[in-house]
Structures are given as C-alpha cells and as structure tokens.
Amino acid sequence: MGSTIGRDIRTVPNVITLSRIFLVLLGVVVYFYISPGWGIVLSTVAGVTDYLDGYIARRTGQVTRLGEILDQFCDLCFESFLIVMATAQGFFPPLVICVYLLREFWVASLRRFMAAAHMNITSSLAGKAKSNLIMWSFVPTYLSIANCAPALEPYLAYAAYLIMGLGLLASYLSAWGYTRAFVTGYAQAADRID
Image (tube, rainbow, N blue to C red; front, side, top):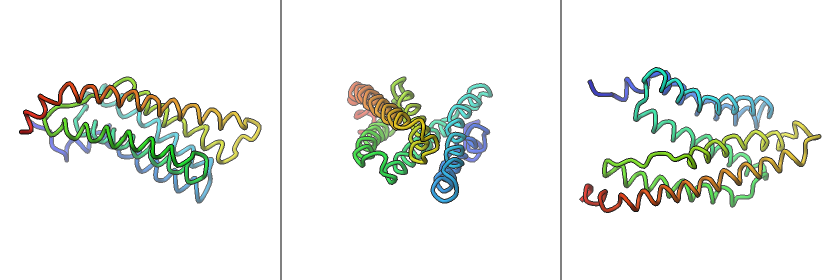
C-alpha cells in the first residue's frame, strides 16, 4: 500500500519535526517579549528535536519522503529565523542574511529541477555540518545578545562569529557538491523533463 500524506504526517518523527517550527516561533516570541533566557531554552529544545526525529524515524522504520521534505523545511525555518533575529538585534551584519539566502535559493533551485526529473540530490556531510554549525551558533549568539554571561564577553561573541562563519563556509562547500551533482545529472534530467 502506498504512502499518503495524511498517514505520513501523523508519524511520530514527522510530528516531532513539525513541532520544531512551533518551538522556534515560540522561542522568538519569548526571547523578544518575555525572557531572552527562556527564548534560548526553547530554541535549544527545538534544535534537539532535529536529532530526535531522524533517530526515531530510522529506529522505527518510519522514514518517509515527506519527513525528508519537512526536515529540510524546518532546518531552513530554524536557521533563517535565528539569523534574522540576530541581524535585527545588530549582532550580525545584513550581509550574513544575503550570503545565507543566496546559497539556499541556489540549492533549492537545483533540487527543484532535479525533482522535476524524478532525481534526487542527497544531503552531503558538508550540508549536515552546515545545518549543525549554523543551528548551534545561536547559543553563543543569543547568550551574547542577551548579555547572560558578561564575564564571558567578548569570547561568546567571538565563538558565535566563528561558528556562524564555519557554518556558512560549510554551506558553500555543500552547495559546490550539489552543483557538481546537478551538472553530472543535468543531461539525463533534461531528457526526462523534455
């Protein structure tokens, strides 16, 4: 029996994945309007769910194509919201958003083309490193913005810049790999689309 979106979306891993968006949005609201510390805690919990959903999916055999799509979407929401928040606070320059989005738009375009040809560009180690580095860079970033540990400054800020920089570097390394996969499969993909 084939998968349906209704059945796939109700799997435990996919429900956990969807909860990440809610937790990130809640974390943003709490951070700005209630308590920066609790906003960081909620965002951290959201980050941990990124590991939990995949683990449960593999252990229970509930790996779905929908789960892969939702996971990528949630990662992009998580990363984008956190970068925008930090930029709005003046912590990162606007160039960080531009560099981040340029890569994301490019990779999304490659994947869209390949998907139309029923081909897939699988995630790479560099792509996973990018997600992990960017997502976890928010911990020192928001601790620094919220001035939660003044004795650790400016080292928290330096750590945030370094981790974000490494994340952006990994993002472009992975984009290069995805571009190479696209170029290799382009002729075959174009024939399938035509």
